[in-house]
Image (cartoon, rainbow, N blue to C red; front, side, top):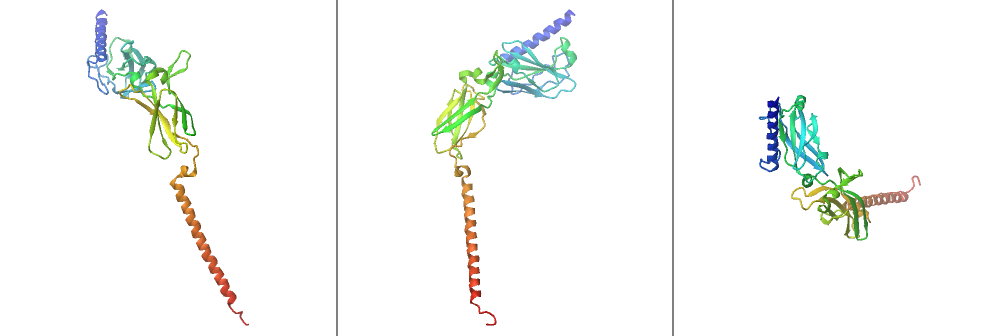
Length: 302
């Protein structure tokens, strides 16, 4: 019994040493890491290990995905933080994805995921199952900024005013209300407005750190626009998702609405009216001449 415990402890130490090497960058980093210790595992070295491991994160909602679909075995996910204890998620799952949002609350910490290939019996002993390791992931610098929600916009005279709302995250304050991305990023977060004259392709932009824009525009024109969040300090994933495109409708005329199509419709109608008038005039003229000719003919038998 003592020998078996010593062997298990030695295997655990080897695994911790491997994880430490990953944290200090001494192992090769790939876009998708497919590292397997099946050769050193005594649990079930014949089980396949996860491949194509990816992190998918929007507004700090983070899903871990991998392949292949298990058959005859299960997966268990372990999240390893640089400064936090290991946490298990999706224990004995037959799925190939796992929501790990709640164990990544320290968003500035860097994490790796160990995806264990296990059978249900292996969870009750000290034997180490084969596993694969993900690429490193830091939520603060890698989560994608979601779409801001435009709440109100008005164009009065030469001023266009737009009010919008920050995307919310899955994390909450002590009172239960959800934190927005601004609550987490604070001064690192900016928003960019792209706007252009309706039916024009020339875009202009403006930037703000608040939740509103006020820009000067041509009072006789309508404008279309969209907003997206940005993190200027990032090297990658700087630009967030774009909001829906909206357009103002102040003083919109039929010409603004339909443009060249309106001219074509008017021209077709005008031509049709002219042709009808000409045809009608010709018919009336012929009838008049016919009637006049009949009136000049002598009466029969007179």
